[in-house]
Amino acid sequence: MAVRFLFARTLCLALVLGTSGLAPALAQQVEPPGKQKKLPEAPAKLPKVDRTKNLEFLFGALKAAPDEASAKHVEARIWAIWLQTPSDTASLLMSRAKTAVDAKKIDVAIKLLDSVIKLRPDYIEAWNRRATLHYMQNDYGRSLADIQQVLIREPRHFGALAGLGMIMQEVGDEKRALEAYRKALAVNPHLEKIPDQVKALTEKVEGRDI
Image 1 (cartoon, rainbow, N blue to C red):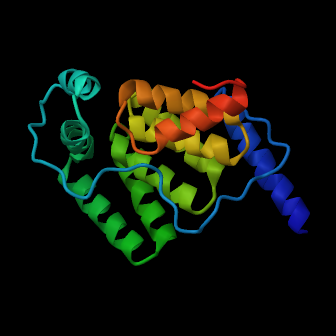
Image 2: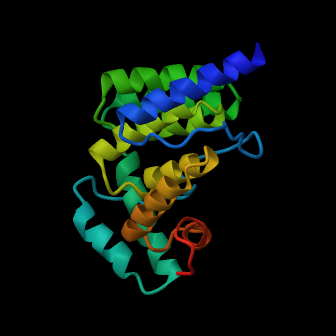
């Protein structure tokens, strides 16, 4: 019975990945270490920003940041723009979803995010947070589907790209994990831990040091 469930789960993941052009080699399902997991997300403290702030300018500043402190400041401003809710209703639902997560009611939080996405499918952070919750539940198929929606709307979303790399790495597709990590670093060269992952995966995938 357990074997049948694992096969069904793996097959479901393969179908989702296949439809998005991301099908990995899934010889076996790799269970991630630890139960409380999160994809890369916004820092706890964010600056107040103008809704009309030019993301193009901020992404350029992020790449050109001379040091870690400067990069973190720009990164926080980008997150602040992504997190701005498009309506009072969406804001209320997002707040309730956070409360549900804090209470460890993940299924309730997902349903609330479902409502936000149905109401405002253009709101990137609702997709991103739901991807995180699916990932925490080891539901990689749904997490990847939501990450894909984030990247359709914002291809420079370094959090989603890094999250994609994490999932690909955990299911054993190191080549696509490396590709995702490299794309994330191309947008945000100052991501923590990702350069180490790129170095290790490059040696494994390409058989040489970078």
